[in-house]
Every structure is written in structure tokens, then in C-alpha cells.
Length: 261
Picture: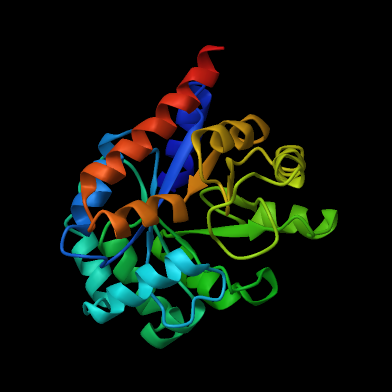
């Protein structure tokens, strides 16, 4: 359970956790983007595996996924390429259940483990239907991260926290991924509810777009996941790792300033 163990250790050191999302297969330099954001201060990195119908994702990630698919990205190719990474922080993938089922649950779980990938997020696989994938992932040593939404009732929230491995992903708003001008008030409430329910690392994601928003969210939780704001910079910057690293370094500096306050 490397993902959860490392995040717990970093949290114990007083660090606000930062997990960037990088679309796998987006340009020939996507592995360099992962390396760059690791060097810039990421505590773990989420690699998105492109899918033709990403129901949770907004325009930016949809565009990135479509571009990666057009460039030949497949789940097997992304996992194989990710095996080349040695970035010093845990890696996890985010993908939709159709891709998992198509690959075969046990087969895919072992592919992830063999590639050195520590965790997986399958956002369209609800807790009640987790057993097949959850059992296969557990047996392979892959930590399955579960999501909790602002509308999740307290009893189900407890069940999600108990079953989630690695960390618990608190969805900060209702809707698809994408940059927002501001976070809704219930984002902080989501963090507080999760923190009062579990001692596992709690990260807030979806809509967190700026250093200021990251700081606000991290104060209510243990850290943040930042996706669309980073992916947009990679898209408009031609996939350059320098643009990605600069943004993550900005987020890291803001979160570290909170620690010093």
C-alpha cells in the first residue's frame, strides 16, 4: 500500500498534499510532463487513460483525451510507457470501467502492478459494484481510490471511506471537471465531512484551478487534485513539460506558504 503510506507520511510532516492529473499519451513528451511535475513538488501523480466517452470530464480533459486517442494512445500502451517512469512519488491511473472490463479485471490489475503503478480511480464504478475490480486490485496490490460527492449521505460516506485505499477523493462540486472562477462553499464542507469520518488522507478535486483555490481547499482537507488547469497548459503549450512544471511549482509554493503561516 505504497500510495496511502507515502501520503500519510507526507501529511505527518505537515505537508499539504498536491496530486496533479496528466493525460497519458498526450503528445510524445507526456512522460516528461510527469517527470516535470514530480520534480516541481507533486506528492503523487494521477495519469488519465483516455476514453472516447469520459462522462465525468469537461471540455479540456475531453479534448486532451481525444487528441491522445488520435495519436494512438491505448490503455496497454500508456501502462507500458508508464513503466519507464522512476519519479520518486506514487503513480495512479484514472480510467473508466469499460476499459477495465475490456482488458480483464485480474489481467489489468496485474499489468498496473507490474508497471509500478500504485493505485487506480474508476469514477463510474460505484461502491455497490466494486467487488470484482476491488478484489482483483487488492490481490495485485493496487489501491482503489473511491470518490465521495457533496450529496453523499453520511452512512454511505462512512462506507466509502472504509473501502477506499490510497486516499479518499472528495469531489468539491457537482458537475464535470473543468476550471472554475471560484470554488463553491460546499467544497470546504466536503473536506470537513470527510476529515471527521476517516483518518485516511483526504484530497479535494474537480474545479480547483488556481493557487488560491488550492489553498482554500487544502485548509479543509489534506490536499488537492488539480487536473483541467494543468491539462489546459499542456494542450496550449504543445505538451511542454516546462509549462506544466511552472504551474505545479506555483501551486506547491502557495501550499507551502500555508504551512509556514
